Image (cartoon, rainbow, N blue to C red):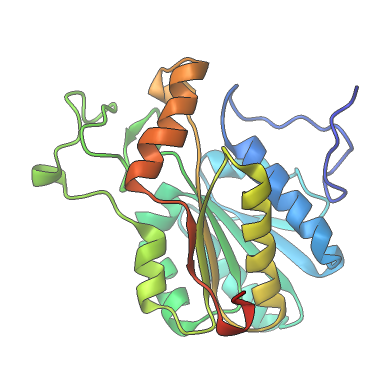
Amino acid sequence: MEPVMPKCWRGESKPHKFCPGCGHGLVLKALGEAIDETGAMGRMVFGCDIGCSLLAWDLFNLDSVQTHHGRVIPVITGFKRANPQAIGIAYMGDGGGYSIGAQHLVSAAIRNERITVVLVNNTQYGMTGGQMAPTTLPGQKTETTPYGRDPLTTGAPLKGPEMVAAIAAPGAYVARGTMANPRRLRNMLGSALRNQMQEAGFSFVEVLSACPTNWRTGPTETWRFVEEIMTEYYPVGEIKVPLEQEV
């Protein structure tokens, strides 16, 4: 039986190019379902960052652009300003959004840009071999922290949604989802897109994701890390919701 794919998927059963067990496939499927639910696929432009996220450049039957590392937010911002009727989606990893692209994330949130940012957090730099990222957890071993991350020497892991919520305008939508709960994630992504469509403000969704290739973990250990260890430091939920969306 063929898997049911979002209507906006390019080809009904097109496989993704990510490593086995990678969370990007689940995140992108949830995003595709959210896009379908808006009924506005023809107005959307999808931008992806260099890094693992670039492998999503041809998954959707949308106008798409792949940018330099950390630059997808200003590119989508420029597209949205040039074409205000468009619905801009900036898709990236934690390196692209919290390291080299952190300035653009902060600036877009402060300016309340009417775009939707989706950031996948797998606690390390996936495409370059698993080095420490801004989101690497305390004690977590990576290629550049072989004895575990020490917050006293490297700083504490960045909580991006909490930072964005603190600086964004009242109309912003900010949430943290997880690949472990695709249905709730789809709802968060749908809320983010609708917030942009209503011109309410900046929309930001971080998604907790897995990278068993660089974590060097099996299925059980991988799932436990995402569901239990990551969520202990990065709580899942809506962090900032415009007043008109509160229920």
